[in-house]
Amino acid sequence: MTGSFTYQFDTPVYKGTTTIRTGHFINGVWIQAMDPKAVIPVVNPTTGETITNVAAGATEDVHTAVLHAIEAYKRVWGLNSPGTARSLLLNVLADLVEEHADELAAIEALNVGKPFHQARNMDVKTTIELFRYYAGWADKVEGKSYETDEKKLAYTRKEPFGVVGLIVPWNFPLLIAASKLAPALASGNSVVLKPSEVTPLSTLKLCEYISAAGFPDGVVNVINGYGDPVGVAIARHANIGKVSFTGSTRVGHQIMRASSETNLRPVTLELGGKSPTIVFDDADLKQAVKWAAQGLFYNSGQACIAGSRIYVHAGIYQDFLDSFTETVLNLEKLIGNPFAENTQQGPLVSAVHFNRVMDYIKSGEAEGATIHTGGTRRGTEGYFITPTIFTGVTASMKIMREEIFGPVGAIMMFTTESEVVEAANMTEYGLAANVFSQNVDRALRVAHRLESGSIWVNSAGDTEIAVPFGGYKQSGIGREMGQHAIDAYTRTKAVHVNIGHEL
Ligand code: NAD
Image: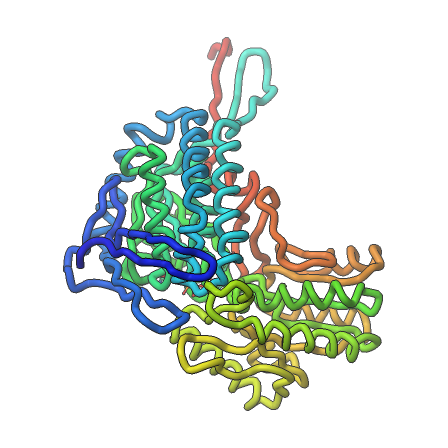
């Protein structure tokens, strides 16, 4: 391994060259894997070709990173860095990301297969906003003082944990890394972060900007690697005071178990979903169709909040289905290379994931559902699947119960409000739900009865940085975004001061 690779983009939407380091970023220095043969191939999902290899970390890399993170925390960070200084650094980082926004979007399009414009206007744009937003919080992390009596003062402080572990999935690599890094750093923690082994490139590039922004060495450490051993080592490390994990519910259980078996560190878990979209007969049909399609197929359906169970009132079922089908067939024409001007849907992220999604499609057919549209591979190169809609489904089918995480959804008919609320809630997940109705009483009544951490009324998935995000049930524990993330990365200390009580 040479330690870096250079990639030349010569595409209709972006021309330029990027060089990315492929080691671990520990204490401000790039470290190669201890065993030079321990590498992870990083694949371009549009072609199936290997882009480069990155170092595959080991448990010892996590130990080394944690030691440096502790040292940095004690010496120059945490309680020794004023919020104003941390704010300034986060703002400089936001500026650097903005300066290199197109390059980062191109890296994301290359590695994840996202359409370049979507990566630029969503992932990178939100990343910049996140660093700026939490730069604003860094000097506003406040405790409270309490009325006791005149001879006593009691107050609280919001203190960082010290070292926090951040574990990131592959679907929004840069954005999710930023959504954890920004509040963790704003509140004064040092971090050890593991990107997904499938999509590490944008995070590795970000490390250069973190360094250039002037963050002290050791405050941010990034280890490449597989879930086992690197994620496991983070989840179990005795000196990591908090873990924030985004990924599957299956691994979420393991992260929580690791905490209970080791130091009982608090965990934030942002997990899977199987979100319902409910369309009542008084909805604005045109808008409902557009939002429901976007809510299901955005990012090739590889979104935790994807509205993959669409319930439509019998009175408009056929009209909705016709219009939705037309929208899906139009989207199908816009599948293609992420770097083409008009592309709206790229490939799935990997061969493994492509096969998993195709297996779900087969299972839907085998269980008797009807493929209304899609359900096929597109082309012979890369991992493209046509947007797929099932009809004729029942609640017990696997495709209605499990998270597919691809461009696959089902449409079902309902007749009464209570029936659809019950069906929507009949899932182990509770991340998000979308309700379409022009009747505000009904829309809000249903919104309040759905068991989900986020509800969208007459839209789908347009998250806001300032608004808490997280799951009910097995979709997660804790909240990210807004002030909630500052709370999640701090612990409360109560200080009691005697100013005159004598014993
Ligand atoms: P995943 O759970 O397989 O992996 C997530 C991360 O955990 C990766 O970095 C992986 O290497 C690491 N990991 C794997 N095994 C581990 C272990 N035993 N200990 C510690 N770390 C381990 O998820 P994925 O396939 O990368 O991402 C898709 C999943 O993420 C979907 O279920 C999706 O719904 C979920 N997700 C949730 C949100 C949310 O905010 N709720 C957002 C995006 C994705």
